[in-house]
Length: 227
Image (cartoon, rainbow, N blue to C red; front, top):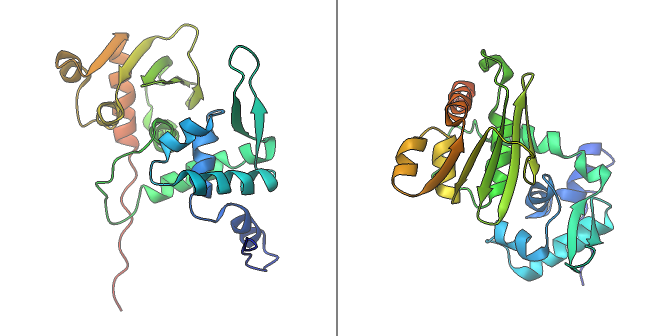
């Protein structure tokens, strides 16, 4: 097996790229930021990577101390992958990278491939300066087998994997529909009427959050002017 490539540069940026710069590596980290996942769930969120390449990236990230394997207790008896404390420090960098990438001068029609990527988009898009009414809401979001708790309070939006204890509103739907809802391209009422979305609780609070996200949308970066 060939040895892992290195930039051979003592700069911290180059050393970070030695660890997470291989193709798919940083997206593996993205899939684990919100909580542990089994191999099959990781692969479902990264459908473009082969199982062999995914296994290799997991081994490399584990060897580097970015993630670890953990056995679930009974009755599950399965293994999950989770970020180490050091690996979790990549979260604000990923959110910042997502915010920067969202301002690319050339828009894309590529869909979101995983629920985690959409929920992290909320983190990168939310701007407390646009939240003039200071929302205070807890949402339970379900996408297939994935469940998330989204909380907005005190000018901060957080996302965790799991079910909140007392959500103010609930949203259940597939990834394309929830993407359209949260990015303001479709209304909750329309999707619910068509049977594509199940919504409950304080749906108006979700609409207000979507308004904030739309207002928070950063200006698209300008393409460089040719010399």
